[in-house]
Length: 175
Image 1 (tube, rainbow, N blue to C red):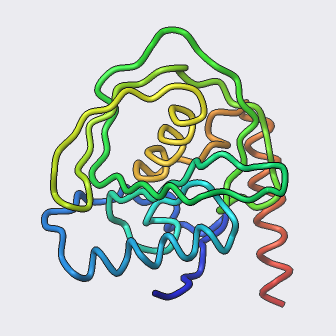
Image 2: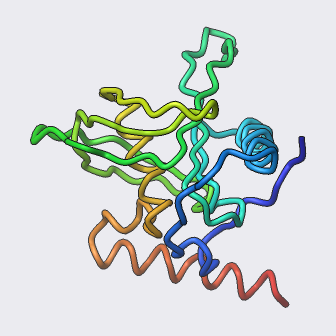
């Protein structure tokens, strides 16, 4: 396993639409292992492969509840070629953050419940209902696979301010 660099705004790769995984190869399994190591080290609860520069439709996630010491028993999940097959009309507002838009948080409105179809790391196609934080996180990560960021759900003014802030920081880091 290896830590991978997480791409951050304004990296144009974050706007790529990821390609479906055709076969679960040893290289895909290594990528998934690396994604978990990277996600846990960040620390984060979800990571799309494009965030580590691999435009493939893969998501890693761990929503394990934390105890009073901020410790959790890992509950790693992998979603390959995930797609939302239905969603509720009822929405939920949640303050989201993103490893690719570090230290910026904003309230985003999303469907409260979604039905998800995906392939497991073992190659099985499954469907599952997601609600609450699971629904929010899977929608956030699927957005990444489609070349979208959570800031794209904000007003144009807020989105432009965030993008300008990160573009300026990127220019300063180049000097």
